[in-house]
Amino acid sequence: MDKLAASVGLNYIALLTTDQIEVLARDPGGIAAIRSQQNLAGFAYWDENVDEGFTTPETQQRAYATLKELFPGKLVLIPVRLAPIAFSPDFLDKYFRPAFTDLVTPYFYPVGTTILGEAREEDPWSERLATLLAAVAARVPEGKGVLPVLQGYEQPGYPVGARFPAAQLMVYRRFWPDVSNAALEAWEFPDPAPIVGFAALPRLQAGACSVFAGLAGHPARCRKRSPLPWR
Image (cartoon, rainbow, N blue to C red):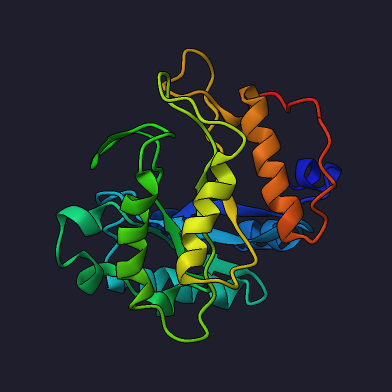
């Protein structure tokens, strides 16, 4: 992964489960190997033993502290699943702990079939997303950075186009006008797959390129590239 990221001039975030973090903490060889990675920006962590998004504060604290001790110069993130806000009234009280992530990293994939219902790109999905983000924004400490996670794939029957990434970012900027970074969830699966991956969606690629080029201050620097194979 490190060589692949270097070949296209990118840094990357590695995904670890909380169980993997516990094992890693006892593995000097693994720690040394990770420290040698030149393009690793940091880690996102999650607890695979509970429902998605429901990592307890105690587990968050332990995972965050362990990774920061082992890799003090790296980002450590726990993504904030937004959907439970709508069906679990005490979700944020019980599970949202911005102290255990370097950036608040919300995610909700608004177009397609979701636990909150279905939506197409032409539907008013932005208002649903805004309602969820408003609940989080009210709890984000002043000065805490935010990293929006944008949907970078489509479900069959729910096409998305070039304007979709920017439209998502605009909703986040209602609450954080100065947000200057974003991430893209670009799932890829070998065929047959339940989604259409980013590499097969040239219009979405163009839209994502425009968003990231704009964030980098180079809005005209988008050119077509050959897609990377699934791996």
